[in-house]
Image 1: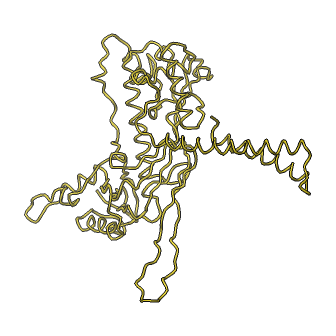
Image 2: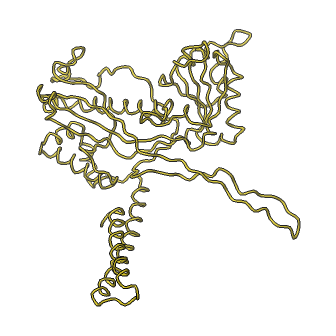
Image 3: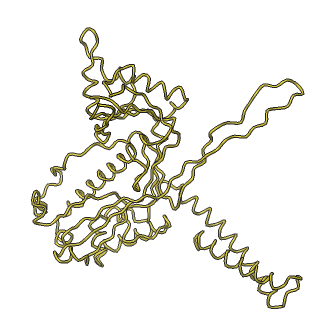
Length: 420
């Protein structure tokens, strides 16, 4: 069945053709050929209407289907790994590479987006050249061997990712720009006397929009690593990409500026609540946290996945607060027994007045943070890129398409000038 776009394009073509036939017969009297063609166009238009209706229903059902496997061979899908995708991009014809291509084709069909390389149902990659001798600080030869222990692999230290854990709403399978209607003001309601007119009014609407934004990386792998490395490198690569994508999304969700192709994060969203410590910043106190919570509650925005997010410096500073007796106040008391998450992706580099190194504390309904995802990871393998080719390496580009928006700015409030 043709896609909605193809149906609309064909409908525009026959509309133009029918307009030409009608214009040739201003008195309404058509030639036999024109009449026959006009009848054919009318019949085709009816078929297109039926096709559009069926395709729209299918698209809607597809977007709302949860947990449906891409094919009936779920066990085989789980075996399609990053290395299979890379080898498929290099032209491999074995069974695993073939499965990678089949799954990519199915994801293209579902998303309505043509992959420039091969789609893989996982996350971002980290930029790192992996060969038996590079990088010097930790050559790839360390993971080629018969006794490689992936269960003891030592990953690098990374900032924790928290946004999705706190309840952000993820919209997946998007195919175009997304506009979500939002009610800004209700219809006015009033008590009236008998035989008195009701107040006439209209609700006020605006919308929240999500548009595709792209982030990605180019990395280099050696051909020998792609073909000969221990299978356990697959788990390492997947883990690294999952964490890196989580960091990209968390950082943009918190600090995204909305400029230079970056999404707009919570702290840059106009209209969120704000509590100031002082002209030059200052230490966080119980009263300031209470004001932060109260500001959201006063706007009726405290219904949902309510939680705090800050960094480890703020946690350490709050842990030192004590009562007059010297006993610690305790984090549960300070945060009113609410949910709290900590991540050093919440920056501690703010500047205000003469204050530097300032941290932030965010409170809000995290389900009102929207993360739109248009595609899975698009992996393009280029074994002929000049620099990589000269070293017998393979150049790999990985791209993801996402956007971030806040459903209701009133759902969030922040303190951004904390000395900790």
